[in-house]
Every structure is written in structure tokens, then in C-alpha cells.
Image (tube, rainbow, N blue to C red; front, side, top):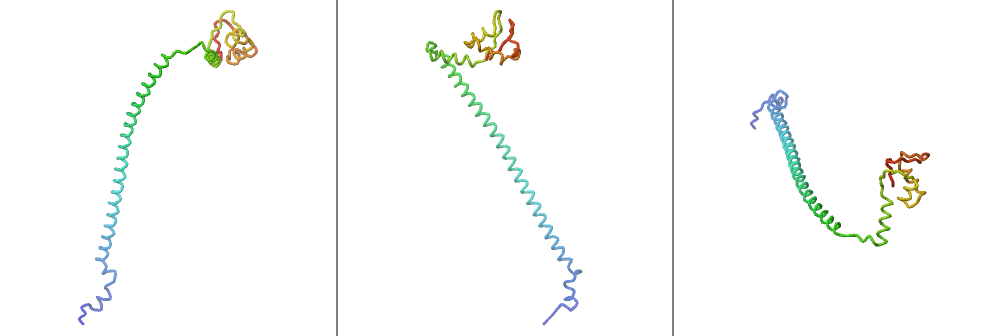
Length: 163
């Protein structure tokens, strides 16, 4: 019955000139959403950095714990090594058995020795002395670069490697 708006006010109600109040409200709403998004991003970044810092602190602490446990293990190993060495030094081998003698000869064959040639030594005499065979001098020649396959001459004071 009472219509307080006239025709002009109704026609221009949605015109752009009359939307200033609504635009400010929408711009303020958008600005508050951006602020909220910005604060959320900062919060997430802070949480992640704090969490990684906490991990690094725990990591450094675990390294110290591992170092101390390694030191304790090393002490245990050293004491066991000393105990084993004591037992081995107290135990005497029975060198009179044929098996022990054969085993020591076999080990001597596989060990590398360095000898100094004495006056009167020949390749054949050295191979007989160390290998039990005069014809095994090829082993001596093959392991010494100073002796070529053509020259089998050795001199007193010369060092030879015997396999």
C-alpha cells in the first residue's frame, strides 16, 4: 500500500553508481580471505621448519648415542682380543705330529720371503733349499723383475723375492 520508493530509485537501484558500498564490502571480504590465506601459509611454514629443526636435534643426539655405543663395543672387542691372545700364547702346539709338520711346510710354500743372495748361491741351489726341487727356479725368475728370462745371473747382496 505504501510504496516509499519512487520509480527512479527502483530503476537506478542496481546501477553501477549506486554499488559503491557493496564493492567495498566485497573488496574487504577478498582482502580478509587473502590475509587468512597468508597467515595460514606462514603457520604451515613455521610448523614444518620447527619440525625439521626438531628432527635435526634428535639426529645429532642419536649420533652422540651411537658414538658412545661404538666406543663401548670397541672396549668389549679389545678385552676379548686380549683374552684370545692370552689363550693362544699359553697354548703350545705339538710340533712333533706329522700333520703339523706337513701343514707348516705347506704354509711355508705359500708364504712370500725376501732373501739376500749369498756368495756361492745359484738359482738351482736356492730353489732346492726353499722348494725342494732344483728345477723350480722358474718361480724365482717369474717373481723378480730384475731377472729376465734370458739372464739367470744372480749376484751376492742381491735381494730376491721367493713366493
